[in-house]
Structures are given as C-alpha cells and as structure tokens.
Image (tube, rainbow, N blue to C red; front, side, top):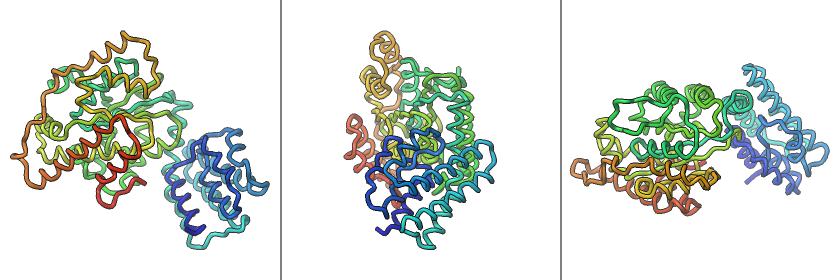
Length: 426
C-alpha cells in the first residue's frame, strides 16, 4: 500500500469518529520511520472531546519537536471544533475542521511525505462532510454525561421481538440495575404479563426515525443502505441522547431495552466510539420459527416476514457489537437455567455476587410457564423461498447458541457467512 492510501484509510476511520483508545497511544512510540509518523500520529489520535494534558503528552511522546507541534495543532483545532459544536455553532466548528485539514497537509509536507492533490482533496472532503455529523453527536453525548446527569454506565438488551428481551431486562432490573422512569404501562396486555420493561419515550424516538425513513418496525429489515449517514439519522442520535438523559438522569447503571435498537445499532456507532460511557450489551436469541409464530399470533405478521425480521435484528445486533462487552444468551437457557444466565450477566457487569437473596429474587423473575410458542413445525404454511430463509435462520441460530460461551474469532468468522451480499464488518 502507498503512503497516500495508508493516510486515507486512517482518515476514513477518523471521519467516522473512530478515535484511538487512550491505552493505545503507545502505538506512536513505535514510529521509527519518518514517512510513517503522520499515519501513526493520526491512528493514535485520542477522542478530541476528552481534554486531558497528560493524555496529549502521552500521545506525542516519541515525536521530534516539529512533529509534536503539528500534532498538538491538529488536536487543538479538533478540540475547538468540539467546543463550537457544544455551543451549537456549526459554522465556526466547520472552520476549525478546515484548519485541521490545513495542518494535516502542512505536516505531511514538512515530514517529507506530501500527499497527492487527489488524496488531499479526499482528506478535506472526509473531514468537512462526514466528520461534522459524527463529531456533533459525540460532543452531545460527552456533554450529557459531564453536565446532563447521564450515567457513565449503560447496558442494552438487544434482541428480536418475542425473544425473551422483557424477561431478561426484568431479571437484570431485579438484580440491581436501574431502568428508565417511563416504562411502558400496559395493564390489560395479555402478551407480556410481567411487563415489557421498555422505555415508552425510546420506542417513540425509534418509531419516529422509521417513519421518517418511510418504514415501520415491521419493515425494519428494509432499512436503506447508508441510512446512518442521513439527516434523519443525525437528528435521531440527538433525540436519542436527550431521551436517555430525560429518563435515566440520576441513575447509576440503567438497563435499556427496545428491540428496535437491534437494527439501529449501525447509527449508534459514533456514540459508542465517543468513549463517553461504559457500555455492555446482552443479546438474547430464540428459535426463529418460535419468534415468527409468536409475532404471527401477536401482530398478525406472516411467518416469512417474521423470519426476515429475526434475521435482520440478530445479524445487525451481533455485527455492531463486535469487540464490545457483550453476552449472547440462548432463550432456552434463560427459561430453564435463569440462575446460570444471571451469573454470566453479573460476571460481565462485574457485579458483586455475594447477595444471594437478590440473585434468587432476580432469577425467580423468570417464569417458564409463560412461554407459549414452541418450535411447532409450520413449514407447510410457508413458500419454498420462506423455507430456504428459515433454514438459513436456523443455521444462524444454532451457530449463536452453540458459541454463546465462546464469543471469539471463530464465532465471528462463522457469522460473517451470514452477512448480506456486499456487506462487510467495517
């Protein structure tokens, strides 16, 4: 790969808000080739929303005097852009991003590795067109944590509808996690007798995004390509942050559940990459035919539509939580061995396991008798195309549940085979 290509690859990552973890700053110390130092410098860029002199010092360690000046100038302009975004002055923020590009190009020339005109234009376009949308969301999240009362620890239950998400969320709440203060209240509901444990406001925020994209939760498997870069997604992230602040303010560690979040996780990536919160994810998975049948009874959806929705929710939830603290949980285990599942959850959350009474109350929340739909063979009601989709969904389900306690590279390689054609995990 050429130097221009390497720089462009790093800038593309930064334009998505994928900043280097603070502990990875040691990468810069290994830079021994001057032509590589600009790449190492950008690759080790800490989140500009974080203002810590010690962090900056570690970041530029190993660079010569001129390189350190260029590095600090780049970071200073990015930090000024963040401050202007916080003041809701996007034009001034854009000016600082423009100056950031100027310093990057100046640094490449000074380090003896000038970028071509084509690469320079591409770098400028990425910083000025894509980064502002991402950076504004990251700044908003950082401000929500620092000044708005949003807790630093958040857990999300990401599972397809009718997959035990309510049961799992309720169990985690009984085990000591907080919940949003606007839980759905459906006293006459006969579907979830023990409650949905779901934020009414979050559901409305997500449904609003679907409407603006011309969809409904029941057609959310058809989200348009690059939807996460749209103006609607930009507004959705801002609404999402405000909603979380409104309903979780003052809590210590809330658990948040809305099945819609599974297919919207791609749009969450800038917030995840901001590093403002410690996030963990629980992904319950249930047999796709059971889910499709349950949806058919509850929502009058076809079996084929239910299976397509299951595939989209599970694939997206798994794809966008890779490398993050997460737990894949088989529905069968949740129903039959809730105490074991709870122990795994508490281990992920680093919870103290000494409170036996609390653990027994939490695991006792799970009632297997409320499970209505089982894997009844319904293939005769399905078209040949739907049966092919079901077979693929069953393979995905078995892959996940057989590896739920071995969530590593082997599982990810197997799951890549289920990605839609033309989709990668970039």
